[in-house]
Image (tube, rainbow, N blue to C red; front, side):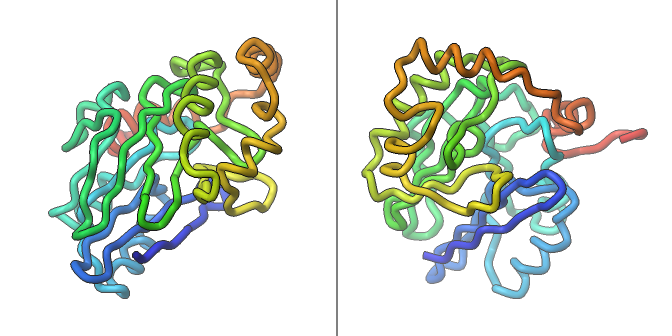
Length: 234
């Protein structure tokens, strides 16, 4: 398995490239509009065939590069959760759905709570999971807008992600403190919002965060509901 973590400094967002080296089929998870040329060049240099443009959710802090990357790789299919409400997608994903990259399997795990349409992508062969904004390193995605529900997020993380093998590597959608990866075991033990916390305690923590809106909110959400297609003025 080929795996690469890529970073966008403006939004502190991670993009992930996963590929099956034998077939050459690849998937990009959570691409960023401003990094489309970087990702296009990398795919071409490595000689991979882009099969899937996967999104963990409809982002509020950056615009996806899915539409512009599909212009460069016409065979690629854009995939989001059916619950995300993005009718532009080629594939509407559901919980437990399986995607194939050659012999490589990516399992779709519905992890709503940050948004209705949040997904995590689990790769058993690599013992890793891309958790989007459901689970961060020592944190989690906010739940105060865009269908956020702290109780639902608690259920998603503790009932699904925390039931993956302890050694599973956790690769989040963002990090703001310089960390790149964690593990299920680490987050179960050390995540201050979740470790040893009841559902009620977690809900109280999340409802008390009082965070400022994401700086690209008004631009990002409408564009991402169109799979990254920008309109005049944006």
